[in-house]
Length: 193
Image 1 (cartoon, rainbow, N blue to C red):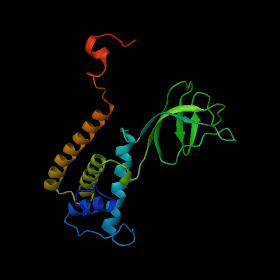
Image 2: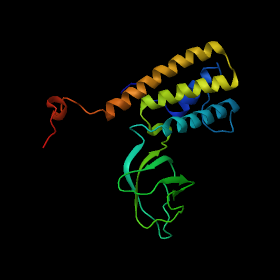
Image 3: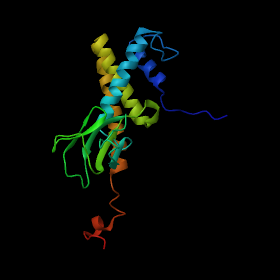
Image 4: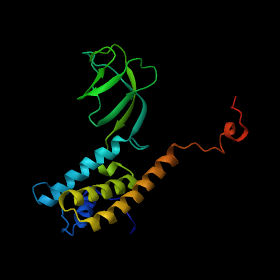
């Protein structure tokens, strides 16, 4: 039998939020069971979408090709939070509902595929642990501020939030930062042939 630490589940996160106001934990995420649990879950999910919209290494798809359907419209993945045109795409494009809209030509109609950088919203358990912790702490602070406003608890939770954000940003940098020692152009000042 292996004992170890596991990343937070959504239920763990909701109970962590409730714990900041000394509320009893819930056994399920059934919205009908406990009002406080339901409110905590809604704030957790809203905060998750807010944090993920920034775009991190774990939910960013760069150079993602979207093709028009038979009606010449481009349907977006249902978990699209944000997108920008990239690559050879000449038009400015934006998300309008579940479809892509061409701002340059003022139309939903596309003749060719469009390449975008896409930020997608992931379920809580699909994110890395550092993101789960940051989202939980941020949601707990927001929940406490919104419904109870205890300044002492807010100060403690704000410090936790800053530490969790630093950890998440550090992990994002580690993932995206090139290793300068492995790339000779940085070491010698010359580009590789």
